[in-house]
Image (cartoon, rainbow, N blue to C red; front, side, top):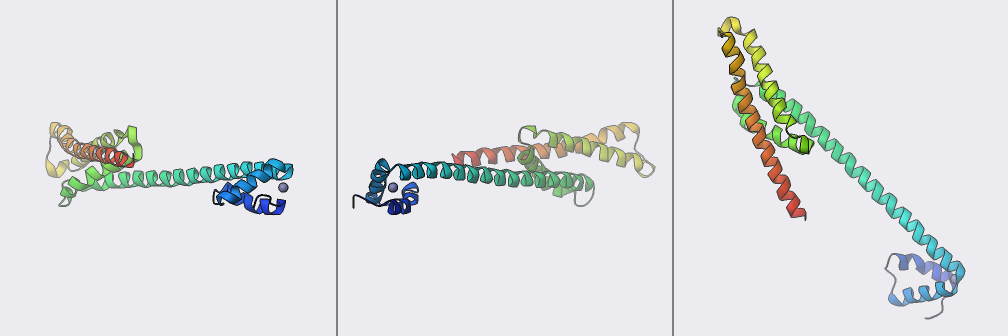
Length: 185
Ligand SMILES: [Zn+2]
């Protein structure tokens, strides 16, 4: 099979392009387009078309991936915010020890969502915890009988513990990220 017709050549072209044609078919097509101008033009056009097609597929994949990533980041941020309020809100209640898990989780999720700006989450936890307890102690002054010094200093103990746990979560998140990255390399 040395000489082939234009029709056969056109039929074989897509197979040659996709590299699934047999060696003999590929050779026959190449030989034909070397001699036939019309088929050569068609063959080159197919190159352009497949290039454009691949490019648009790649662009679409990128768009889908970045969309999923954005949604994951948004979800993580919402969980961080809700988790922060729940965690801080259960301070001094019977559930407060759940914060040993909640705060590192918030830190880890915060690291996932914010990457280089991860420090926002522990700082946010510190401020939220401090303000929350500060306001709570002021409201409860008639029953807790705290003086001003205690009201100012006591919330910082909670704030330091919670942001410390949160930083622990950031570190765990960072280590997981490094481990995951190494595995992917
Ligand atoms: Zn031809």
